[in-house]
Length: 180
Ligand code: FNR
Image (tube, rainbow, N blue to C red; front, side, top):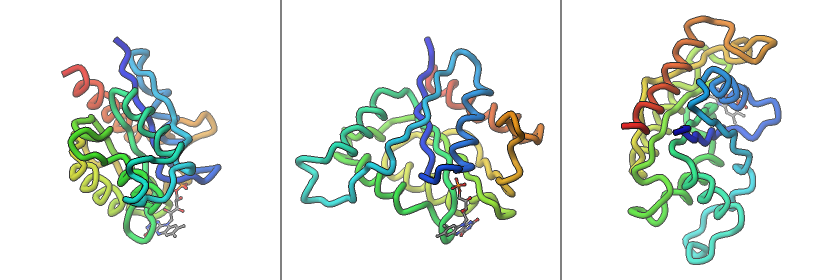
């Protein structure tokens, strides 16, 4: 069966490198993977416990998209040594109710890309920590895309053979976990 992967970029920027890397992951994945780039992050309402009984449309759409997916593949930029607040906000919503949340027991993998030489290393560590706290099953190695603005070629695929291999390996780790 096809493995359905919801790809979530932590950046809502139109020209986001993180979104571009997720698109590349979709290209590199075999026909066994159906990767959908999620575009609903900007629509997720600010978290408020008062709204938990009746979450907004943005939150409900996110939950549906996550529940329909076999796995989540994140690519996050780094803002001030952490993950973007907008992504954290979405994960706080997605984490509830804890035992029955869209994240609990869900296979997830994390990529980070930034123009710096560290490739969102700290943001990735934070994201892994948060996902693990939410009960997600985070698989695969750390994948830091440093100097990210030069990482992809005209064809949208990694210029560097090593990045191409590690991106493919990460998707394969997700597939292996989902297939058990
Ligand atoms: C950044 N950026 C950044 N990069 C980094 O490697 N470490 C950091 O701590 C920060 N801090 C930071 C704070 C804020 C408020 C902004 C807006 C940016 C740079 C950031 O990683 C860069 O803009 C990425 O290119 C964003 O990824 P997308 O949008 O191309 O996916």
